[in-house]
Length: 274
Image 1 (cartoon, rainbow, N blue to C red):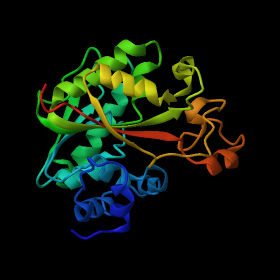
Image 2 (cartoon, one colour):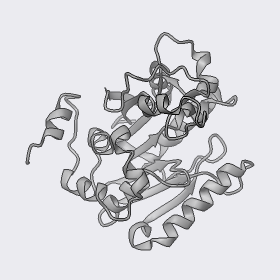
Image 3 (tube, rainbow, N blue to C red):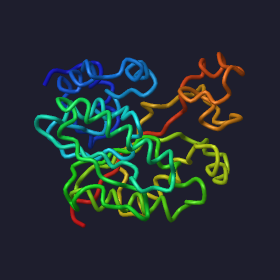
Image 4 (cartoon, rainbow, N blue to C red):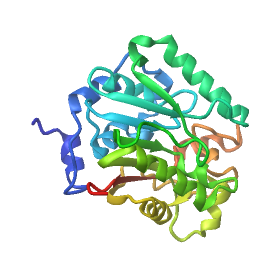
């Protein structure tokens, strides 16, 4: 295997580390179907390092949780898995009471239907815990990936119950030994858990505890998506920072200089013997 600086960097994270197929991943990152605006966010979201850390391979069956309207990671995962793998996009439910959720799902469907040469193998399911939980057939997925979603399940009164329901659905979809990759905005450890309700930031130990209660075991954590410039204390929570920039022109340059949020990157496993 050719050793690259990326693989040398990642080798120190865990003795359980599984190398991704780097050439295929590089090809997916450079795919002409990627939106230029999305690709510009790579400097903040580190998709190559993140997916390699999780151990993604192009022959896997993968579930992406809540890809949103634009499918930022879908643009990478779909071409990577198209020929030898399978991608489930666990979208919002079409009969959601939220217009935002319904419109996001519709926009996503329009996007993938417009480019069948890239997205024809993507299977769209519905996920909205605890009501919609069938993200993929039971024990079928090698990997489940969720990017910046745990805070959504916790906020607006969801709390522990909804977070555990979400992790339970992901556990059910994974094969024994399957991997769950979690990235989310990180609340400083000395802040009260009550700050999770409206800020968009989550306590890392809390996320680990919820996943563990659902049956997962933590394999490793990484600082791939850390941002020491982010205090996690902003007028509009995490949405003060790019790409949302909810403050508009108010201190815009300051928030652009901070960049995207400080994020945890966690790798879990469903035990091989359940």
